[in-house]
Image (cartoon, rainbow, N blue to C red; front, side, top):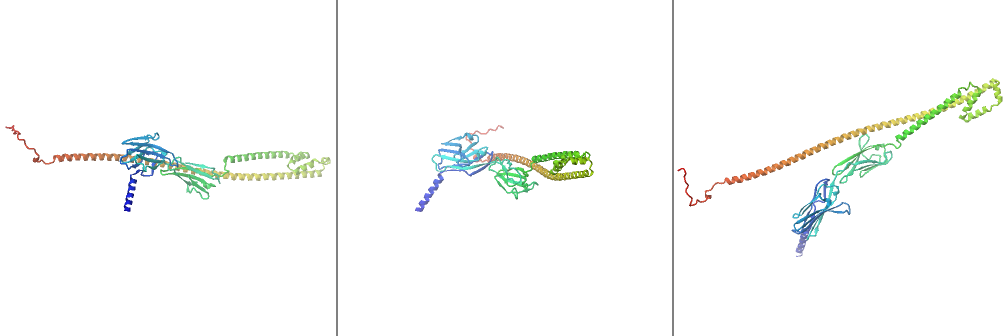
Length: 472
């Protein structure tokens, strides 16, 4: 007896649960492309066989937490009559496909945009049936292909620096993912995480640390989602920090001007010394003294010798004037040795200057060689870059030509499908007409092909006059 009561109680619970209001949507997630005309299905079931008052409403809210709910439309059904109220924000964009007998309340939305990427709710309120599940929700994801991303370099591409390569698409739903690819200066593929260079990649940002010359090359970023992908590329050229052409040119020009001025000053000094030395032996003792006085500024030793000569006593001059041949020859020999010493000192300084000038010319030649080598490498890099750009343009042209042919093929395919549907419609109408004609002919032939039965002939009335023979 207790078992029977339990079965009856569970049966009553099941019946009451089924009879309660049930609002449902087939799926919890719908994905459509931007610009499509879509239908979000919704159905409701009531325990009342013919409800008198029903209110159906559609609303939406953002996917973020605590997002504001926005009402789209409300349908009022009262005793066989329905009234639809659409909010001004969605006029001419939404309609309601409703059937109270079958419990259908589908929302039709045209030309969807990214702003429709939200959660939609279908709610039913029935007078006398307020238990059960009065509402159902579904997420709408508007699919948008990623726009062409923009690639940029953040930081100075110098040896030892840290830089970021950024990649971002302004549009894309679902949000696109980014992937970096790299090619070296020889246009050969490689891993963007170059060995010997620490790097990270996150959310379209490729971070390169302590970059070197091997980091130079071509970098391509691909932005991808469910629709398709788009690419952008950037060229990275890592150069030394001191490679500043303007500053280097200014330094070279300054050095050249300084050397020119120095050469001019030295030349003028040499010319003046030669001019002073020309009358050395022709003018005698007094001119030699003047020549020594002019050269005394070159060193303390010459200055002391000159002062000693200036302090010569009048007796010595008288002795020279009297023509003391031995003393004159000794003095002349001293002056000659002093002149030779000065000439040797000048030659030593000139040799030292020539050595420094030769060293400068060697350094200048080495700098010119390095500069020429850098220009050659830069020219080779520009040539490879130009060749890469030409191949890229050729690839883009072939891709556009392929897309054009594909579009033309799709147009012809669509036209063929339309003609085939039209042919199928005409063939179906022809079959219907032919079937109708066959049935009509069959009914006509069956009516006239039946055998004549004399028993079906009516009886001849008794007062029928006899047939008159007009031939008589």
